[in-house]
Image 1 (tube, rainbow, N blue to C red):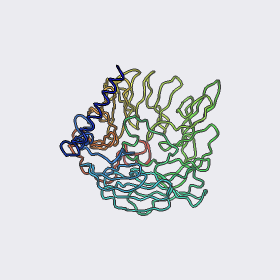
Image 2: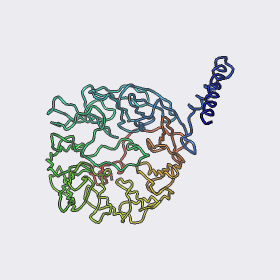
Image 3: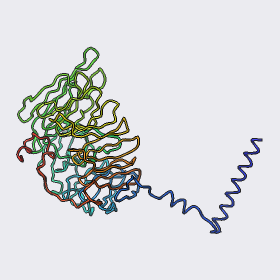
Image 4: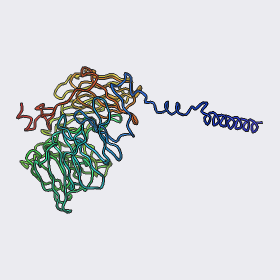
Length: 467
């Protein structure tokens, strides 16, 4: 009986398909164009809706604001789009892209994997401003572009350019550089920012070039002073050492194994004066995993601070310049995000994100969520909180918690600027203006600023000079 029923259903399906073919072939009725239009219709990225929404040719690798344009990086191409409308302005067949500079000084740098050289493009027109045929790696910052070229395994040179400049600002020798990568922004010896799953790691755009950079050179660490354009000191790491360069200091993390545990000593050196500035015992920067104490990871942090675990298990934020403990967490508290000024914290099992300003005991503001695992990031333009039960994207002013945007959306935050942010899901991207900035982004201007938040730590010499 069951077999007969199955055969009967199959017969009806065949008959229906025959009728459908006849209707389509005679132009009596064709459901397929309408069905395809329904599938291809863009669904709103959020509620309320974004100010504009555009469909890309594929899912992007990265999206970065570049002045009045947006750079969208795909797997085999890079394109520029209008920040005002999202309409595509240009496209080039390149494997990678990055943004240097900001405002009207911004440029897009593109290149091919496993191929020397790069091109510097105008972000609005796509016009090639400068071409290089020899560089094997590129680093992009808000105020500079660095590249490295090698005549041989022991003959490499680091060169600094202004983003729109045509002549080098300085060059430094890097003999025996520890990487040969034909791509953009390879890892240096520094601290890595805390991230959130639904916010791109480079959402805030390029950072300001630090005053000191640490390069792996032939098993050593070469420290380059980017203000003076010279190598200031080389360090020889021991077998259980980890070196990172953060906030104008060279940090040495020494790990030793005893009693089935790892014990750490962190020392900070001023490489120009060649002297130790501060030291902390029993400060775990989470650079080692396991009792073997082999250090494979860089510490978390940002600009002028690092994140660590104290002996009692609480998280702490340390100023790398002078070694001060800026913030101490309570048991069970989770540090979600940090920069030179603020820390975003979630209590154990709690549904609140609280912002603290370093040096101020009272919390600046709090955001309540229904999600116990709510995540957050902080940038110079906005703190972005991303609950997932239900899905939301909330942008808040870092200083006072003023709500800049509040969306019901499962999209990813790709880029955050002064006036709004780019969100996206799949092939769709859209622009969300911040409250008070207008429905569409205003034109940006170039030029430098003396705001200390753009400096490499509030106590750096170039920042003090402006105060």
